[in-house]
Image 1 (tube, rainbow, N blue to C red):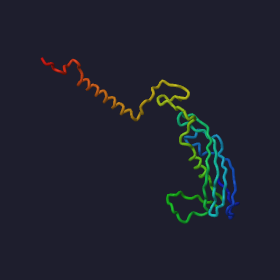
Image 2: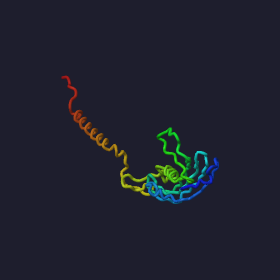
Image 3: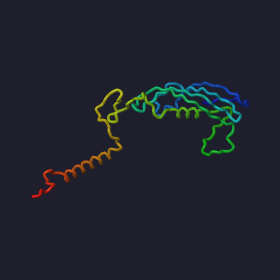
Image 4: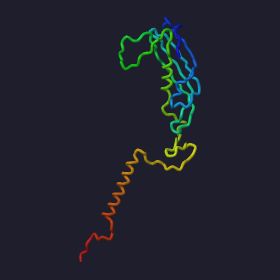
Length: 195
């Protein structure tokens, strides 16, 4: 979204507010997003700081995401705030070389597209759940455990530790066989009687 700032040029401290809706097509390629349910609503304030223009505001958007446990779609509203200063000229000294390049004013406009898109992308939760106690999917057959039960055995051991479980079982079988051999027959006489 490009903002025309010609009304603020040369007026330090002056500001204006803008509220705009636009489509959030950039989210269609994100795997976590099932569907975009509303346009992106941006409520922004642009202020002339003398050295540049400070953009602050709130973003809101309704989405359908996938539950990270059962994979069912769920509706949620993302809300995030933004704050970025667009400078009239690049900074003369770059004190921190790791710092990202500061956005600049382009003529009488500032382009807030990347700022808005990045802010929305960062606000998408890494893991969402439809309910706090969602049991998820059966690891054996993939059944949705909240809706149906399955006859799969309860996984009592982590699949990554299964080889260790086999080793443990083999070791216990070997130990049991050796014990039987050493201490086997009760018919053996352990004491000699004195005559």
